[in-house]
Length: 325
Image (cartoon, rainbow, N blue to C red; front, side, top):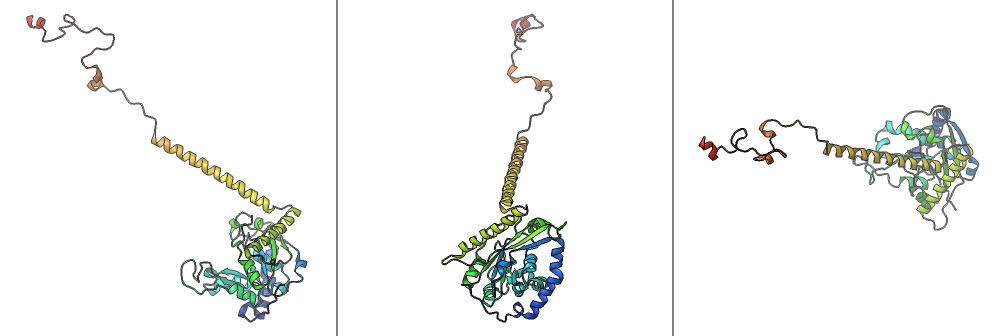
């Protein structure tokens, strides 16, 4: 049975004033923008009727729209204290960088370099264990278990951290499938808004809890399969790409890329061989003494009779005939 933690005072994470400001910013600014550039349909909110206290939301991650879609589609009672992680070495190095993720998403810092160090190696404050502490104090979390956005639309493997947190803190995991977000705003068009109001679906599944004796890796994979099922059921119903189709496209792209690389390698090898063994150019025939074949020295051409005495002079200047004359 899931434990319902009591919300403790953790500063801005549980501040009522911060919650009111955050929800107002989302309702008045962020949600109208996202809902204006996309056509959002929400499914499964009835599955969340029994959720209270802390929880972990886990969703597939393929777009910058993902976090605003979840914050904007949740009921206010569930999004009030919801918090999501942001890179400590980027967003939390200056107040102005942290302003947007904190204002809209109640973001908490996450160490990416490990051992309290940023990617650049500069020493910093460690935030290890903060996510677990927030859950213990009743703050729900949004965690993208893939760790990064998909570059292809296909879901990647899940890291077990979200499942481990849910198991250790006795809170449920809410699986969420985001359908169409990748097509609306893929990773290769950074900073550009969707065009033409593409269709996007946010699908909430039933809260999930680990089975007795289930370890984090097993629970994480079960959550992943549930998200894939939610995604594909909705995708098929609305004529949108399924995860299998995304994976098939990815596989075909890989095959085509390998074929192109093989052709390029073959062409480069042929070019190197041609450069190493060029055709010999025609050379002009030699003239003068050098034109004589050394092998013909003292011999006549084939078919010519040897010269004898009396034919255009003596055959041998030192012969008796010459001495006699």
